[in-house]
Image 1: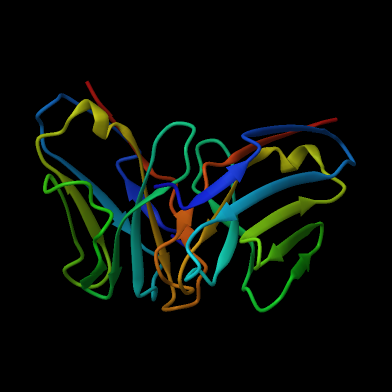
Image 2: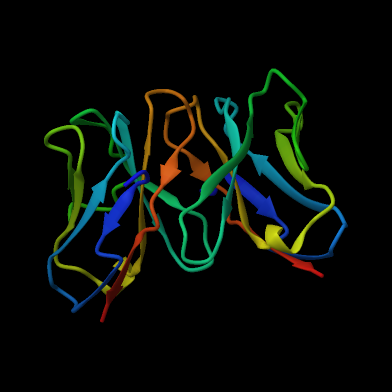
Length: 113
Length: 112
């Protein structure tokens, strides 16, 4: 597809479970970002990849959150021991290096019961 | 610490009217200021962006005004249309391509 693709679009899980959210960026985009958006709030930065490496992971809230981008394209956000407070829409975005414009996917809505 | 403050939280405007959204930032290292538009169930999409070396930028019906000394910037939507009904977010970063810090959003409703 032409845009950023995120799967699953919806995920319902139980407290304490492990969750993986996948992001497939626009082909050729070297930068990839993860944001978290709670209801009625602006997106909150989590982590940013330039190629395969995490250029800035200062937004990850704690060590239960981890993200990888092993081949510089698809990225997976991993959340261990989920808590009810992790419920949010997780947004992925990609961009050409240093152009500024982020192209967002439609997000993965995570609900932790 | 909320580094980008946005107001108002919501706005109702008649078709053809002007929508004005304001943002204030604290970090003087910010030098890239985009506005994003988000429809329900969709991701944000870039609307218009400005750098601090200019005081105003216009693209179609959308204008950003920037006041560096006051650390404030605003979005004006001229001739507002029902299709403009969406949530608008201001944002800021140290450089284009770096992480964005978003404001809390403004929900705009344009009444026909």
